[in-house]
Amino acid sequence: AALNSGRLDVAIGFLPTVQGTRQHALLQDRYIVLLRKDHPWLSAPEAPPTQTPTTPATSLARLRQLDYAAVRSHAETLHILQLLQLEDRLRLTAAHFLALPDIVRDTDLAVLMPRNIAQGFAQSGDYVLVEPTLPLRDFTVSLHWSARFESDPANRWLRELVTTLFEAMPPDERTV
Image (cartoon, rainbow, N blue to C red; front, side, top):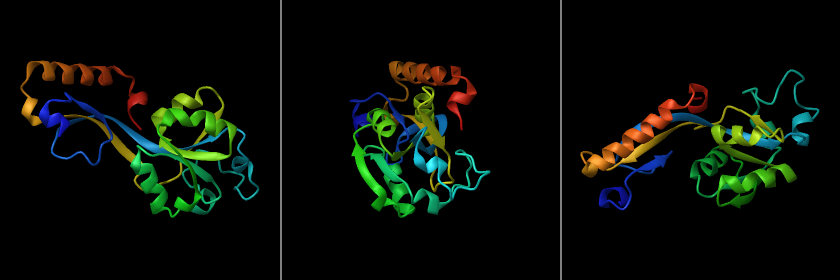
């Protein structure tokens, strides 16, 4: 409604509930699990010796050993926890992903989050990314706009600018 009324010019994100907009895919991403680097789960004796944290074969039984934090505004992460029947392992919800790095670093909580965001946190060396095979893990971040304003010169300029900025990103930063 905000796009159709002109209150918003564009929306950017993984917006599965937004319907009836024009859209352009900007990047591909995937949900992963973020843990602190010395989390006890990473060295649990039941972990196969050849399994590394990024091995997709991380089993559901292993994921059930974790307690989770989630972000209210990213409903898909909550949906994935429900699909895996892990909602009883949810211990904390936060308003935004930026609130979670300090919490994850100082607790044994794990968080499902987009890999592109998690990689930024992991650059500090304080975190490990675990990439299990999750339902609905892959998603597309898109640029959305209203067909009503598709021919508007300012709107077209903004869409082209955003698209150009994302295309200028190195491929490994904008794709899975």
